[in-house]
Length: 115
Length: 116
Image (cartoon, rainbow over all chains, first blue to last red; front, side):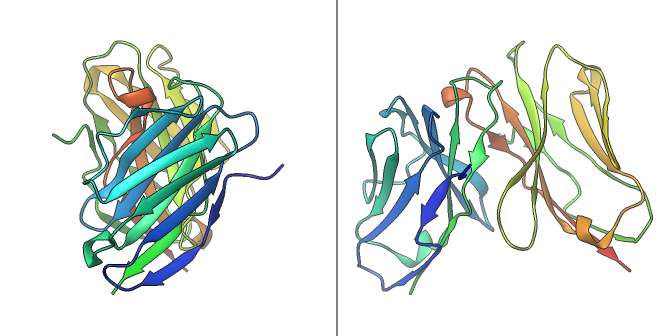
């Protein structure tokens, strides 16, 4: 079975450009999480969807960040305009249910570099 | 405030040594879940174990074992007879109902280096 799929795996862009990260969760999973990993802040939650609905976006750093989940098999995280401090690895994770009992499966991550 | 503390930033051991990675957590919820994830140099996050707050039984899986003690709010991870392939960053994480959707609250990680 395919795991969580993220694209692109690597993205290098210039400051001010729009960046779109993509995620395809595991089929049948109804919870989706976006995390960001940096050296300074470690792994932190950005936003959480349940049944395609954003439940909590309090972790989104600022209005430059937006996320959507138009259907159960696709989610995007967009940064517009991008800044060098957005450089990080962005992970998408999915789980079968809402609740800690359900293991979260992580994608391979997208390494974003903003110059 | 940091909810999951991994006090050891880096550990270096020689192959075949045993090593314990410490994890201390903080929560006010009575129901919660604890996890360990491994992040090898390739970067992906690999699930190792999940424990719920009502199950304090220690667990062993091959060379890996976990010690969960609610009295000290700790969930330590021991690798017996370490191998070079164990070199990775290990993350302890807490999942609780008061956190959005039981999202994972990660510690800062412990970087383990196993040398031949």
